[in-house]
Image (cartoon, rainbow, N blue to C red; front, side):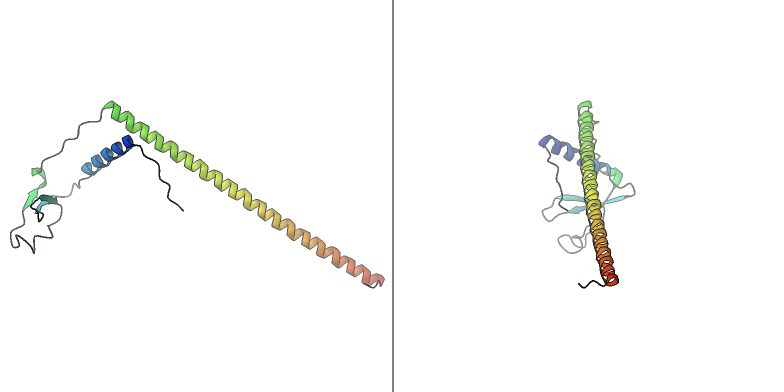
Length: 153
């Protein structure tokens, strides 16, 4: 079944990006007690939940792995949503719900049409079988009468 894509306007993309970013930032695992400080080859700092893979063999091999307490990391404060942003998100949610309802209605319509078509084909087959049975019965009946009356074919 082909995947249908919903066209997204540029404003919607920004809202989607903002929502995704906010969800990613809020989804930090609460159970993580320790964050590891890793250094990429170009000396950029990376924070990781897991021990750094490159530290065992590479520049700085043999150094003690530096870890940072989660509480010590700078926190990013996301400002609360403005009323305009809330309305925009609500409008996006309503539009998505309406599109889902239209898709569901279209699918139900296709299923009803397919069901009607199937019932029509079944009725045609049944009628065809009945006609064949009646024709066979009439031919058999006519053959018996001829035999009884002694009429040659």
